[in-house]
Length: 114
Image (cartoon, rainbow, N blue to C red; front, side, top):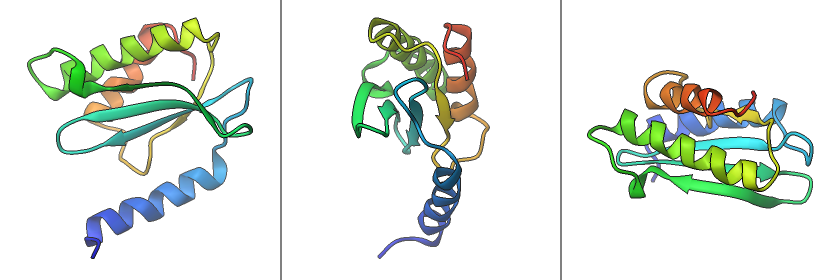
């Protein structure tokens, strides 16, 4: 049985996804945050394929925000190798603060536009 908190997040995510879709020109940067890590994917929704993905589990850092910054830099490198420079940001129903905000700002600083 799902918790009330996860059900609310899924409803918020459904609202976001109704407005946000990725294309070949501007794929979607999707974020998922668990208690232990952040997982991010760049997805082309027209083809239904993942272009690049990263998890903060393999990153070195003292706290979750540092690991999120490093994961963002890694994702931007993978995206650049695949030819992606612009994305649409999908925060996954999570509030834009904490590690989500840190990840987004680090991705922008590394050269990804959204």
